[in-house]
Length: 134
Ligand code: TYD
Image (cartoon, rainbow, N blue to C red; front, side, top):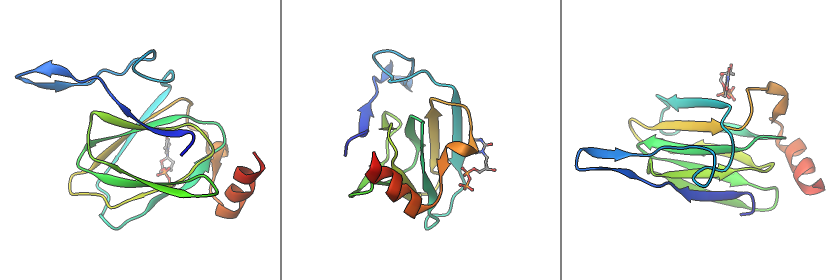
């Protein structure tokens, strides 16, 4: 799906363990202004239910696994995130829902902008309209 892709991070480390470093440049697509993370979510809960007008995000499941369901207004695609060495890069007006959280799942989100409630589209019909107009 356009504007959504899985990024494989460069994993550093040695016999003592692994490490991923994310810096703007070749390894990472934008300057990070905000980081937040989500945990303690029951398996069947569905979070998200929104898109963004002007935001890039890279979503990393740093522990456990979960499913991201992305919708561009024409089709849906499911991304199963289960590795701290991968990030899901979303840069367009994409409706997202995430669910199927494993025990101990931690989802870290790296964002290109500060928190702005006005950037959210939380109404699916409005999302469809904006997605199909662009
Ligand atoms: P969020 O999970 O996005 O809200 P919802 O589940 O209602 O869609 O956010 C939960 C709360 O955290 C909400 O009060 C807004 C706040 N919040 C911030 O203050 N900064 C942030 O970067 C985010 C993502 C949320």
